[in-house]
Image (cartoon, rainbow, N blue to C red):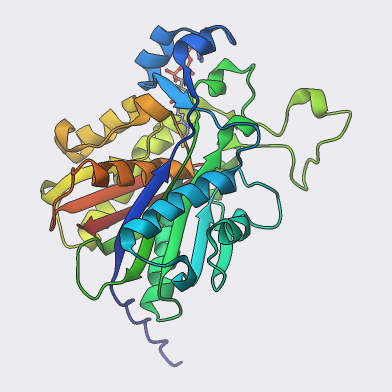
Length: 336
Ligand code: COA
């Protein structure tokens, strides 16, 4: 039997620019108190969320994605015409087909690009990063625009207090290029999936297994359903494991991490990971109090805000980690 040679490692790539966009409309916990049986105190103490952004009826996932993407391209000083790959990570696409990335291509005028979506829930942005890293590293593409974008407000059951208080809308983006020089180099990345736990967090209706009909419409099956406590436990364990793997694959220890940018779902989940990784609380970027859980957009928005707020200096090692429906998880270490 001939040994199959292991694939060559991809050529290095870097994050050349970041961008984000959130809708103007703020929905506070106080406003939610008028919609469902909840309280600011419950939401704040159980999740850390104070408010979230809600897109206008005529503002779609692709519009938010394009705004975030444009800001990332401006920062990277890359012309839209030079983008050859667009990957949008989303579970709330404009339409089931075509992909939201196709609309984004049109909005931005990236007319020479290949464009498609990935569906990996809250881990989607880091899945897109890994795809872009390998595609560019193999020489297949040169300038990738990766975007996490969600309009979760369209897929939330606004009468279910277990879920509707948790989510929000927004988009974040990054431009990935070959790493000739400059910071933002991706040192390592790890992905994982456990389909056996798919039922813990899903949108049960609206797909081929359960089309929405006149009969089942009142059940609101095309909205998020979640077993919160179970998801919580898996989230802590998977993000801890994924973090350790990415740090070790980069040849580092957690003491080397200057900033942790975790998925922004619940402050208690973040606290549990930080404690297990022994990272100082001041070295963790948190914005979930402003936006809630924006799924695939969350890590991308946080990365852009951390960048624009000057939280990352050249040479700093940054850990990104996410977890979501699937179940999926993902992590990456970046040298800024
Ligand atoms: N307001 C007030 N009470 C609420 C509420 C709300 N918005 N949502 C749930 N409750 C109630 C429950 O009905 C339950 O009442 P009961 O004890 O009378 O049955 C009580 O609060 C406790 O519910 P529980 O589910 O145990 O709360 P929790 O401490 O686990 O917090 C979550 C619930 C959803 C915040 C938490 O489980 C969580 O964050 N899970 C992970 C979610 C997540 O991150 N999902 C996305 C992953 S990417």
